[in-house]
Length: 108
Image (cartoon, rainbow, N blue to C red; front, top):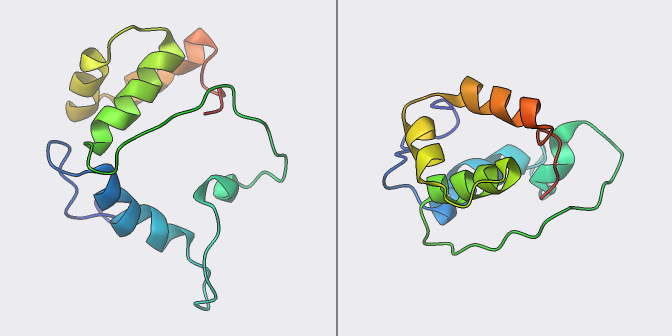
């Protein structure tokens, strides 16, 4: 969201940029007493083991990380097509594809 990270640029923003400018601020506790794991903010108290491990490089483009995870969930062997959809703003179409394939709730 532009409100969360106004400087986000899919062709320049790295994983480090997104974590420092969006994830960490969003996961801070209100009274400055530290933070919490962003994944635990889903509203569910149920802990589910991940089905797949994701590794990344902090200097990697964040959009490539997201596209790689989405592509894996959809069973694709390449992620370039997902990058194009993300850059093009086709987020709802990706969500529909994930739901239709049964991968919407896959845990990483």
